[in-house]
Length: 87
Image 1: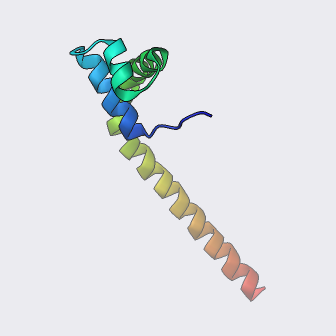
Image 2: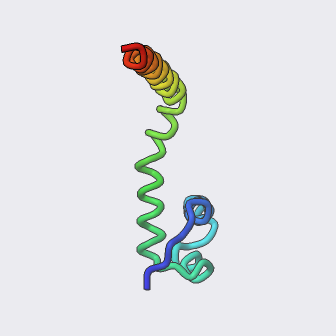
C-alpha cells in the first residue's frame, strides 16, 4: 500500500537532505522512507525552485487581471438578464 506524505512533511525532509548534515541513508532510516524517494523529492524541489521564486510577483498581477475579466463578465450577464426580464 502506498503512503501519501503531506507537502509540509516532504519540505521538512527535503530541507534535511539539502543541509547534508546527515547522509541520505541516515535520513532514510530516520524518516522510514526509501533512499530513492528522498533523492526524487530533492530533485523535484531543485527543479521547481526557480519557477516558484520567479513567479511570485507575477501571480498577483495574473489574479488581478482574472478578477477584472470576471467582473466584466458579471456586468455583461446582469445587463443581459435585465434585458431578458423586460422583454
